[in-house]
Image 1 (cartoon, rainbow, N blue to C red):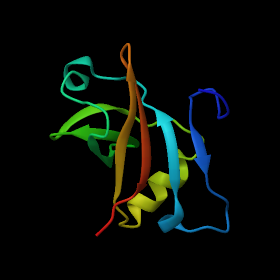
Image 2: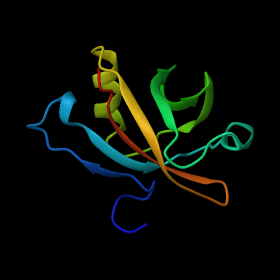
Image 3: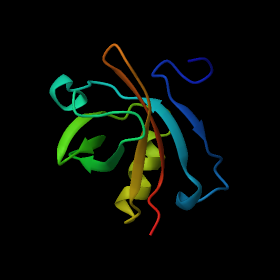
Length: 105
């Protein structure tokens, strides 16, 4: 993947935008192999705050953590009550790329 920061995150967000417009494409960090085995392309993941981190969950289990330059904004939006979802865009050799956006009602 090209573009983005050293964590693999590609954020499309400017300070003028609000939480509803947040869109992040990121490779999950600290991937849990046991959970990843049950995930396929286009699988929907819950993006939630867990402790002081933001994680992606599948079936209530942590699949991996979100490490992106936009994670602070994402965390702030989650703390404000916004809900986010991630869709698996790529799985390859234990790596998982997720596209995160506000959960549709």
